Length: 487
Ligand code: C2O
Image (cartoon, rainbow, N blue to C red; front, side):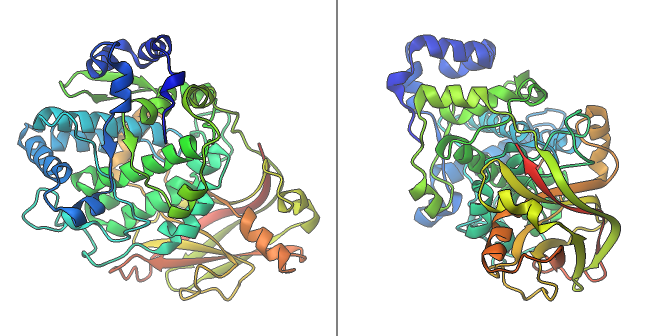
Protein backbone atom coordinates (compact mmCIF):
# COMPACT_ATOMS: atom_id res chain seq x y z
CA UNK A 1 0.00 0.00 0.00
CA UNK A 2 1.57 3.25 -1.12
CA UNK A 3 0.87 6.41 0.75
CA UNK A 4 0.40 9.27 -1.65
CA UNK A 5 2.58 11.84 0.06
CA UNK A 6 1.82 14.47 -2.54
CA UNK A 7 -1.70 14.63 -1.19
CA UNK A 8 -0.61 14.71 2.37
CA UNK A 9 -0.06 18.28 3.48
CA UNK A 10 1.59 19.47 6.65
CA UNK A 11 -1.73 20.88 7.83
CA UNK A 12 -3.39 17.48 7.48
CA UNK A 13 -0.61 15.97 9.42
CA UNK A 14 -1.07 18.41 12.26
CA UNK A 15 -4.73 17.48 12.34
CA UNK A 16 -3.73 13.84 12.59
CA UNK A 17 -1.43 14.69 15.46
CA UNK A 18 -4.31 16.32 17.25
CA UNK A 19 -6.54 13.36 16.54
CA UNK A 20 -3.99 10.86 17.80
CA UNK A 21 -3.49 12.76 20.99
CA UNK A 22 -0.46 15.00 20.79
CA UNK A 23 1.21 13.41 23.80
CA UNK A 24 1.42 10.03 22.14
CA UNK A 25 2.34 11.16 18.71
CA UNK A 26 4.84 13.90 19.50
CA UNK A 27 7.23 11.31 20.88
CA UNK A 28 6.93 9.29 17.77
CA UNK A 29 7.05 12.09 15.26
CA UNK A 30 9.65 14.25 16.96
CA UNK A 31 8.44 17.46 15.36
CA UNK A 32 6.61 18.09 12.16
CA UNK A 33 9.24 19.21 9.70
CA UNK A 34 10.28 15.60 9.42
CA UNK A 35 6.76 14.17 9.48
CA UNK A 36 6.42 13.17 5.90
CA UNK A 37 9.76 11.46 5.95
CA UNK A 38 8.93 9.68 9.15
CA UNK A 39 5.74 8.41 7.66
CA UNK A 40 7.48 7.25 4.53
CA UNK A 41 10.14 5.47 6.56
CA UNK A 42 7.77 4.01 9.11
CA UNK A 43 8.84 0.54 10.24
CA UNK A 44 7.77 -2.44 8.17
CA UNK A 45 6.29 -5.53 9.76
CA UNK A 46 7.61 -8.59 7.94
CA UNK A 47 6.99 -12.31 7.57
CA UNK A 48 8.95 -14.07 10.32
CA UNK A 49 9.37 -17.38 8.50
CA UNK A 50 10.78 -15.64 5.44
CA UNK A 51 13.18 -13.66 7.62
CA UNK A 52 14.33 -16.88 9.26
CA UNK A 53 14.71 -18.73 5.95
CA UNK A 54 16.98 -15.96 4.68
CA UNK A 55 18.93 -15.54 7.91
CA UNK A 56 18.11 -17.02 11.32
CA UNK A 57 20.02 -14.12 12.87
CA UNK A 58 18.01 -11.45 11.12
CA UNK A 59 17.94 -8.34 13.33
CA UNK A 60 14.13 -8.57 13.68
CA UNK A 61 14.39 -12.05 15.17
CA UNK A 62 17.32 -11.07 17.37
CA UNK A 63 15.52 -8.00 18.68
CA UNK A 64 12.32 -9.94 19.30
CA UNK A 65 14.29 -12.46 21.39
CA UNK A 66 16.13 -9.71 23.26
CA UNK A 67 12.86 -7.91 23.92
CA UNK A 68 11.22 -11.01 25.37
CA UNK A 69 14.27 -11.59 27.57
CA UNK A 70 14.24 -7.97 28.74
CA UNK A 71 10.52 -8.07 29.47
CA UNK A 72 10.94 -11.27 31.45
CA UNK A 73 13.65 -9.55 33.51
CA UNK A 74 11.30 -6.77 34.62
CA UNK A 75 9.34 -7.29 37.84
CA UNK A 76 5.91 -8.71 37.09
CA UNK A 77 4.35 -5.68 38.81
CA UNK A 78 5.63 -3.60 35.87
CA UNK A 79 2.90 -3.60 33.19
CA UNK A 80 5.65 -3.60 30.53
CA UNK A 81 6.96 -6.93 31.79
CA UNK A 82 6.21 -10.23 30.07
CA UNK A 83 3.79 -11.15 32.86
CA UNK A 84 2.35 -7.64 32.96
CA UNK A 85 1.55 -7.65 29.24
CA UNK A 86 -0.10 -11.06 29.61
CA UNK A 87 -2.15 -9.87 32.60
CA UNK A 88 -3.57 -7.01 30.55
CA UNK A 89 -4.83 -9.56 28.08
CA UNK A 90 -6.06 -12.03 30.67
CA UNK A 91 -8.08 -9.40 32.50
CA UNK A 92 -9.08 -6.95 29.80
CA UNK A 93 -9.02 -8.51 26.36
CA UNK A 94 -11.99 -7.91 24.10
CA UNK A 95 -13.33 -10.71 21.97
CA UNK A 96 -16.50 -11.83 20.21
CA UNK A 97 -17.41 -8.34 19.12
CA UNK A 98 -16.17 -5.66 16.73
CA UNK A 99 -13.88 -4.01 19.28
CA UNK A 100 -11.47 -6.94 19.19
CA UNK A 101 -9.68 -5.53 16.13
CA UNK A 102 -8.84 -2.03 17.43
CA UNK A 103 -8.15 -3.34 20.95
CA UNK A 104 -5.53 -5.79 19.71
CA UNK A 105 -4.13 -3.21 17.25
CA UNK A 106 -3.39 -0.85 20.14
CA UNK A 107 -1.99 -3.77 22.13
CA UNK A 108 0.49 -4.60 19.34
CA UNK A 109 1.49 -0.97 18.82
CA UNK A 110 2.45 -0.41 22.46
CA UNK A 111 4.01 -3.84 22.80
CA UNK A 112 6.18 -3.00 19.80
CA UNK A 113 7.18 0.32 21.35
CA UNK A 114 8.09 -1.41 24.60
CA UNK A 115 10.26 -3.83 22.59
CA UNK A 116 12.04 -0.88 20.97
CA UNK A 117 12.66 0.92 24.22
CA UNK A 118 13.95 -2.15 26.10
CA UNK A 119 16.28 -3.24 23.30
CA UNK A 120 17.37 0.16 22.00
CA UNK A 121 16.46 -1.00 18.48
CA UNK A 122 14.40 2.00 17.48
CA UNK A 123 13.47 0.62 14.06
CA UNK A 124 12.09 -2.64 15.33
CA UNK A 125 8.78 -3.74 13.82
CA UNK A 126 6.95 -6.81 15.03
CA UNK A 127 7.09 -9.69 12.58
CA UNK A 128 3.96 -11.60 11.59
CA UNK A 129 3.21 -15.29 11.17
CA UNK A 130 1.56 -15.78 7.81
CA UNK A 131 -0.40 -18.95 8.55
CA UNK A 132 -1.73 -19.00 5.01
CA UNK A 133 1.66 -19.47 3.39
CA UNK A 134 3.22 -21.30 6.35
CA UNK A 135 0.56 -23.27 8.26
CA UNK A 136 3.02 -24.56 10.90
CA UNK A 137 4.22 -22.44 13.83
CA UNK A 138 7.31 -20.75 12.34
CA UNK A 139 10.76 -22.20 12.99
CA UNK A 140 12.13 -19.42 15.27
CA UNK A 141 9.60 -20.52 17.91
CA UNK A 142 10.94 -24.06 18.20
CA UNK A 143 14.51 -23.65 19.41
CA UNK A 144 14.16 -24.90 22.98
CA UNK A 145 16.94 -22.59 24.17
CA UNK A 146 15.31 -19.49 22.68
CA UNK A 147 13.13 -17.05 24.64
CA UNK A 148 10.66 -17.51 21.76
CA UNK A 149 10.02 -21.10 22.81
CA UNK A 150 6.97 -22.13 24.84
CA UNK A 151 6.98 -25.70 26.12
CA UNK A 152 3.20 -25.76 26.70
CA UNK A 153 2.10 -25.92 23.06
CA UNK A 154 -0.12 -28.84 22.13
CA UNK A 155 1.51 -29.29 18.74
CA UNK A 156 4.97 -29.93 17.28
CA UNK A 157 7.00 -28.08 14.69
CA UNK A 158 5.67 -30.17 11.82
CA UNK A 159 1.96 -29.93 12.61
CA UNK A 160 0.00 -27.79 10.18
CA UNK A 161 -3.08 -25.70 10.75
CA UNK A 162 -6.06 -26.94 8.73
CA UNK A 163 -6.95 -25.29 5.44
CA UNK A 164 -10.59 -25.05 6.62
CA UNK A 165 -9.51 -21.95 8.52
CA UNK A 166 -6.27 -20.68 6.95
CA UNK A 167 -6.53 -22.01 3.40
CA UNK A 168 -6.53 -19.58 0.49
CA UNK A 169 -10.13 -20.12 -0.60
CA UNK A 170 -11.40 -19.66 2.95
CA UNK A 171 -9.41 -16.48 3.57
CA UNK A 172 -10.34 -15.19 0.14
CA UNK A 173 -13.99 -15.59 1.04
CA UNK A 174 -13.42 -13.62 4.23
CA UNK A 175 -11.53 -10.85 2.41
CA UNK A 176 -14.32 -10.65 -0.17
CA UNK A 177 -16.73 -9.69 2.59
CA UNK A 178 -17.73 -6.04 2.28
CA UNK A 179 -19.76 -5.74 5.50
CA UNK A 180 -17.73 -4.86 8.59
CA UNK A 181 -19.85 -6.86 11.06
CA UNK A 182 -19.58 -10.03 8.99
CA UNK A 183 -15.86 -9.49 8.38
CA UNK A 184 -14.80 -8.33 11.82
CA UNK A 185 -17.58 -9.26 14.29
CA UNK A 186 -20.72 -7.43 15.28
CA UNK A 187 -21.55 -4.96 18.07
CA UNK A 188 -21.19 -6.04 21.71
CA UNK A 189 -24.30 -7.42 23.42
CA UNK A 190 -24.52 -4.26 25.50
CA UNK A 191 -25.21 -2.28 22.35
CA UNK A 192 -28.79 -1.65 21.31
CA UNK A 193 -27.72 -2.58 17.79
CA UNK A 194 -27.14 -6.08 18.90
CA UNK A 195 -28.99 -8.88 17.26
CA UNK A 196 -28.38 -11.80 19.56
CA UNK A 197 -26.20 -13.11 22.34
CA UNK A 198 -22.95 -12.80 20.41
CA UNK A 199 -22.01 -12.18 16.83
CA UNK A 200 -18.53 -13.37 16.06
CA UNK A 201 -17.59 -12.52 12.51
CA UNK A 202 -15.44 -14.51 10.16
CA UNK A 203 -11.94 -13.08 10.63
CA UNK A 204 -12.30 -13.61 14.36
CA UNK A 205 -14.23 -16.89 14.37
CA UNK A 206 -12.26 -18.60 11.62
CA UNK A 207 -8.48 -17.96 11.41
CA UNK A 208 -8.18 -16.03 14.67
CA UNK A 209 -9.95 -18.42 17.02
CA UNK A 210 -8.75 -21.54 15.29
CA UNK A 211 -5.06 -20.61 15.36
CA UNK A 212 -5.39 -20.13 19.12
CA UNK A 213 -7.00 -23.56 19.39
CA UNK A 214 -4.61 -25.27 17.00
CA UNK A 215 -1.46 -24.11 18.83
CA UNK A 216 -3.10 -24.91 22.15
CA UNK A 217 -1.37 -24.73 25.54
CA UNK A 218 -1.04 -21.08 26.56
CA UNK A 219 -2.38 -20.01 23.17
CA UNK A 220 -5.65 -21.77 23.89
CA UNK A 221 -6.33 -19.49 26.89
CA UNK A 222 -6.54 -15.77 27.66
CA UNK A 223 -2.96 -16.16 28.98
CA UNK A 224 -1.99 -16.68 25.35
CA UNK A 225 0.52 -13.76 25.33
CA UNK A 226 2.79 -16.05 27.40
CA UNK A 227 3.57 -17.71 24.08
CA UNK A 228 5.65 -15.31 21.92
CA UNK A 229 3.89 -16.69 18.86
CA UNK A 230 0.79 -14.80 20.09
CA UNK A 231 2.04 -11.39 18.96
CA UNK A 232 2.97 -12.70 15.51
CA UNK A 233 -0.47 -14.32 15.17
CA UNK A 234 -2.23 -11.07 16.03
CA UNK A 235 0.08 -9.17 13.71
CA UNK A 236 -1.22 -11.37 10.88
CA UNK A 237 -4.85 -10.72 11.90
CA UNK A 238 -4.06 -7.01 12.00
CA UNK A 239 -2.42 -7.22 8.59
CA UNK A 240 -5.52 -8.83 7.13
CA UNK A 241 -7.63 -6.03 8.54
CA UNK A 242 -5.24 -3.40 7.10
CA UNK A 243 -5.29 -5.19 3.75
CA UNK A 244 -9.10 -5.29 3.78
CA UNK A 245 -9.24 -1.53 4.47
CA UNK A 246 -6.28 -0.12 2.59
CA UNK A 247 -5.86 -2.36 -0.45
CA UNK A 248 -9.39 -3.64 -0.91
CA UNK A 249 -10.95 -0.35 0.26
CA UNK A 250 -13.64 -1.73 2.51
CA UNK A 251 -15.08 0.57 5.16
CA UNK A 252 -15.19 -0.03 8.90
CA UNK A 253 -18.37 0.71 10.79
CA UNK A 254 -19.16 4.38 11.40
CA UNK A 255 -21.11 3.58 14.54
CA UNK A 256 -19.93 5.85 17.35
CA UNK A 257 -20.11 2.92 19.78
CA UNK A 258 -17.10 1.70 17.79
CA UNK A 259 -15.34 4.88 16.67
CA UNK A 260 -15.55 6.60 20.07
CA UNK A 261 -14.79 3.58 22.21
CA UNK A 262 -11.86 4.50 24.46
CA UNK A 263 -9.17 1.89 24.83
CA UNK A 264 -7.51 2.57 28.17
CA UNK A 265 -5.90 -0.73 29.07
CA UNK A 266 -2.32 -0.19 27.91
CA UNK A 267 0.84 1.60 28.92
CA UNK A 268 3.50 3.11 26.70
CA UNK A 269 7.20 2.26 26.69
CA UNK A 270 7.73 4.41 29.76
CA UNK A 271 4.95 2.74 31.70
CA UNK A 272 2.55 5.66 31.34
CA UNK A 273 -1.10 4.83 30.72
CA UNK A 274 -2.44 5.61 27.27
CA UNK A 275 -5.94 6.23 26.01
CA UNK A 276 -6.83 5.72 22.37
CA UNK A 277 -10.18 5.91 20.63
CA UNK A 278 -10.90 2.93 18.42
CA UNK A 279 -11.69 5.10 15.40
CA UNK A 280 -8.20 6.56 15.12
CA UNK A 281 -6.55 3.15 14.94
CA UNK A 282 -7.75 2.87 11.35
CA UNK A 283 -4.89 5.22 10.46
CA UNK A 284 -2.09 3.37 12.25
CA UNK A 285 -1.09 1.24 9.24
CA UNK A 286 -0.96 4.38 7.09
CA UNK A 287 1.03 6.51 9.50
CA UNK A 288 2.93 4.57 12.13
CA UNK A 289 3.87 1.21 10.62
CA UNK A 290 3.34 -0.69 7.40
CA UNK A 291 3.11 -4.27 6.29
CA UNK A 292 5.06 -6.25 3.84
CA UNK A 293 2.19 -7.80 1.84
CA UNK A 294 0.76 -10.39 4.22
CA UNK A 295 -2.13 -11.61 2.28
CA UNK A 296 -2.82 -14.12 -0.39
CA UNK A 297 -0.88 -13.91 -3.62
CA UNK A 298 -4.09 -13.84 -5.63
CA UNK A 299 -5.67 -11.08 -3.62
CA UNK A 300 -2.56 -8.95 -3.83
CA UNK A 301 -2.43 -9.24 -7.59
CA UNK A 302 -6.07 -8.30 -8.00
CA UNK A 303 -5.97 -5.54 -5.45
CA UNK A 304 -5.29 -2.26 -7.15
CA UNK A 305 -6.55 0.14 -4.48
CA UNK A 306 -9.19 2.52 -5.76
CA UNK A 307 -8.25 5.02 -3.09
CA UNK A 308 -4.88 6.25 -1.91
CA UNK A 309 -3.45 9.02 0.23
CA UNK A 310 -5.82 11.63 1.49
CA UNK A 311 -8.90 10.07 -0.11
CA UNK A 312 -8.17 6.78 1.56
CA UNK A 313 -7.71 8.46 4.93
CA UNK A 314 -10.97 10.33 4.55
CA UNK A 315 -12.73 7.14 3.51
CA UNK A 316 -11.37 5.23 6.50
CA UNK A 317 -12.20 7.96 8.96
CA UNK A 318 -15.75 8.26 7.61
CA UNK A 319 -16.51 4.54 7.74
CA UNK A 320 -19.92 3.32 6.65
CA UNK A 321 -23.09 1.98 8.25
CA UNK A 322 -22.58 -1.71 8.93
CA UNK A 323 -25.82 -2.62 10.65
CA UNK A 324 -27.35 -5.74 9.21
CA UNK A 325 -31.10 -5.97 8.86
CA UNK A 326 -32.17 -9.57 8.93
CA UNK A 327 -35.20 -10.80 7.04
CA UNK A 328 -36.67 -12.97 5.93
CA UNK A 329 -35.16 -15.30 8.49
CA UNK A 330 -35.52 -19.05 8.63
CA UNK A 331 -34.81 -20.08 12.15
CA UNK A 332 -34.83 -23.22 14.20
CA UNK A 333 -34.65 -23.01 17.96
CA UNK A 334 -33.72 -26.46 19.04
CA UNK A 335 -30.77 -28.01 20.83
CA UNK A 336 -28.36 -29.54 18.37
CA UNK A 337 -25.57 -31.67 19.79
CA UNK A 338 -22.64 -32.70 17.63
CA UNK A 339 -20.07 -35.05 19.07
CA UNK A 340 -16.55 -35.14 17.67
CA UNK A 341 -16.49 -37.78 14.95
CA UNK A 342 -20.29 -37.83 14.63
CA UNK A 343 -21.52 -35.10 12.27
CA UNK A 344 -25.04 -33.76 12.76
CA UNK A 345 -27.48 -32.54 10.15
CA UNK A 346 -30.31 -30.11 10.86
CA UNK A 347 -32.92 -29.12 8.29
CA UNK A 348 -34.21 -25.56 8.17
CA UNK A 349 -37.45 -24.85 6.39
CA UNK A 350 -36.88 -22.08 3.86
CA UNK A 351 -38.74 -20.37 1.05
CA UNK A 352 -36.29 -20.67 -1.84
CA UNK A 353 -37.85 -17.61 -3.53
CA UNK A 354 -36.87 -15.38 -0.61
CA UNK A 355 -33.20 -15.98 -1.33
CA UNK A 356 -33.30 -14.86 -4.95
CA UNK A 357 -31.98 -11.30 -4.72
CA UNK A 358 -28.98 -12.38 -2.66
CA UNK A 359 -28.33 -15.24 -5.05
CA UNK A 360 -28.31 -12.80 -7.93
CA UNK A 361 -25.35 -10.97 -6.49
CA UNK A 362 -26.72 -7.77 -4.91
CA UNK A 363 -23.59 -6.64 -2.98
CA UNK A 364 -25.64 -5.26 -0.08
CA UNK A 365 -27.61 -8.43 0.41
CA UNK A 366 -25.94 -11.43 1.98
CA UNK A 367 -27.12 -14.86 3.03
CA UNK A 368 -25.98 -15.36 6.58
CA UNK A 369 -25.98 -18.54 8.58
CA UNK A 370 -26.06 -17.88 12.31
CA UNK A 371 -24.85 -20.64 14.58
CA UNK A 372 -26.36 -19.24 17.73
CA UNK A 373 -26.79 -19.85 21.44
CA UNK A 374 -23.70 -21.99 21.27
CA UNK A 375 -22.27 -23.22 24.55
CA UNK A 376 -18.56 -22.66 25.09
CA UNK A 377 -17.22 -26.19 25.13
CA UNK A 378 -15.42 -26.89 28.43
CA UNK A 379 -12.54 -28.32 26.41
CA UNK A 380 -11.79 -26.79 23.08
CA UNK A 381 -9.79 -29.41 21.24
CA UNK A 382 -11.84 -29.25 18.07
CA UNK A 383 -13.12 -26.95 15.38
CA UNK A 384 -16.26 -27.06 13.27
CA UNK A 385 -16.72 -27.33 9.52
CA UNK A 386 -20.07 -26.37 8.01
CA UNK A 387 -21.56 -27.99 4.93
CA UNK A 388 -24.87 -27.07 3.30
CA UNK A 389 -27.14 -29.63 1.66
CA UNK A 390 -24.61 -32.38 2.13
CA UNK A 391 -26.02 -34.63 4.86
CA UNK A 392 -23.35 -37.27 4.28
CA UNK A 393 -20.49 -34.81 4.95
CA UNK A 394 -17.95 -36.29 7.35
CA UNK A 395 -14.43 -35.67 8.62
CA UNK A 396 -12.95 -36.73 5.30
CA UNK A 397 -15.16 -34.56 3.08
CA UNK A 398 -12.70 -32.13 1.41
CA UNK A 399 -13.21 -28.41 1.75
CA UNK A 400 -13.13 -27.95 -2.01
CA UNK A 401 -16.46 -29.76 -2.05
CA UNK A 402 -18.94 -27.11 -3.30
CA UNK A 403 -21.13 -27.70 -0.23
CA UNK A 404 -18.42 -26.49 2.16
CA UNK A 405 -19.52 -23.18 3.68
CA UNK A 406 -16.88 -22.29 6.26
CA UNK A 407 -15.52 -23.13 9.67
CA UNK A 408 -15.27 -21.71 13.14
CA UNK A 409 -13.55 -22.40 16.45
CA UNK A 410 -13.70 -21.19 20.03
CA UNK A 411 -11.43 -18.86 21.96
CA UNK A 412 -12.50 -18.51 25.54
CA UNK A 413 -11.14 -18.75 29.05
CA UNK A 414 -13.27 -19.07 32.15
CA UNK A 415 -10.49 -17.62 34.30
CA UNK A 416 -10.39 -14.48 32.20
CA UNK A 417 -14.07 -13.66 32.45
CA UNK A 418 -14.06 -11.55 35.60
CA UNK A 419 -12.41 -8.61 33.89
CA UNK A 420 -14.88 -8.96 31.05
CA UNK A 421 -17.80 -8.50 33.37
CA UNK A 422 -16.20 -5.40 34.85
CA UNK A 423 -15.38 -4.02 31.41
CA UNK A 424 -18.87 -4.76 30.18
CA UNK A 425 -17.69 -5.54 26.69
CA UNK A 426 -18.21 -9.28 26.80
CA UNK A 427 -21.01 -11.20 28.43
CA UNK A 428 -20.24 -13.43 31.38
CA UNK A 429 -22.58 -16.15 30.17
CA UNK A 430 -20.64 -18.64 28.11
CA UNK A 431 -23.03 -18.61 25.17
CA UNK A 432 -21.77 -17.42 21.86
CA UNK A 433 -22.74 -17.18 18.23
CA UNK A 434 -21.07 -17.17 14.85
CA UNK A 435 -22.04 -15.35 11.67
CA UNK A 436 -21.04 -17.19 8.51
CA UNK A 437 -21.62 -15.65 5.11
CA UNK A 438 -22.86 -18.53 2.99
CA UNK A 439 -23.79 -16.48 -0.08
CA UNK A 440 -21.11 -17.86 -2.37
CA UNK A 441 -21.77 -21.46 -1.33
CA UNK A 442 -25.49 -21.09 -1.97
CA UNK A 443 -24.80 -19.36 -5.29
CA UNK A 444 -22.72 -22.36 -6.35
CA UNK A 445 -25.41 -24.79 -5.27
CA UNK A 446 -28.04 -22.71 -7.02
CA UNK A 447 -26.09 -22.72 -10.27
CA UNK A 448 -25.76 -26.49 -9.97
CA UNK A 449 -29.55 -26.62 -9.65
CA UNK A 450 -29.56 -28.10 -6.15
CA UNK A 451 -31.27 -25.30 -4.29
CA UNK A 452 -34.89 -25.66 -5.25
CA UNK A 453 -36.04 -27.55 -2.18
CA UNK A 454 -37.79 -25.84 0.69
CA UNK A 455 -35.28 -27.20 3.13
CA UNK A 456 -31.70 -26.16 3.75
CA UNK A 457 -29.67 -28.84 5.47
CA UNK A 458 -26.89 -27.68 7.76
CA UNK A 459 -24.28 -30.33 8.50
CA UNK A 460 -21.80 -29.62 11.26
CA UNK A 461 -18.62 -31.67 11.32
CA UNK A 462 -16.50 -31.36 14.45
CA UNK A 463 -12.83 -32.06 13.81
CA UNK A 464 -10.08 -32.42 16.44
CA UNK A 465 -7.06 -30.13 16.13
CA UNK A 466 -3.71 -31.80 15.42
CA UNK A 467 -2.57 -34.18 18.19
CA UNK A 468 -5.82 -33.96 20.09
CA UNK A 469 -8.31 -36.76 20.26
CA UNK A 470 -11.16 -34.72 21.64
CA UNK A 471 -12.93 -38.00 22.32
CA UNK A 472 -16.47 -37.40 23.53
CA UNK A 473 -16.20 -33.60 23.26
CA UNK A 474 -19.36 -31.92 22.04
CA UNK A 475 -20.63 -28.88 20.27
CA UNK A 476 -23.99 -27.87 21.73
CA UNK A 477 -26.04 -25.08 20.22
CA UNK A 478 -29.57 -23.78 20.58
CA UNK A 479 -30.32 -21.88 17.40
CA UNK A 480 -29.61 -22.15 13.71
CA UNK A 481 -30.76 -19.52 11.28
CA UNK A 482 -30.39 -18.87 7.61
CA UNK A 483 -31.33 -15.27 6.88
CA UNK A 484 -31.23 -12.67 4.21
CA UNK A 485 -29.16 -9.83 5.66
CA UNK A 486 -29.12 -6.33 4.15
CA UNK A 487 -26.85 -3.42 4.88
CU1 C2O B 1 -7.17 -11.46 22.74
CU2 C2O B 1 -6.18 -13.68 19.85
O1 C2O B 1 -6.40 -12.79 21.55
